[in-house]
Length: 67
Image (cartoon, rainbow, N blue to C red; front, top):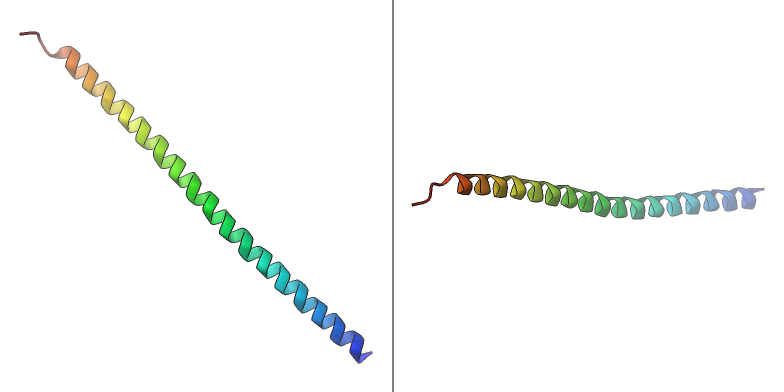
């Protein structure tokens, strides 16, 4: 009976370690995804800001009187 209990406890520890390794690996991949999403959001914001600035420059250029 003791050998069965030792084997069961060993299997339990190995399963817990496998779950912990899988959790650590998933967490690393999630961080990369979050970082990528943040970069995409910042790029979209920069493109939108560039569009607003370009529109203001064009509007000011159209209002300049000819010499």
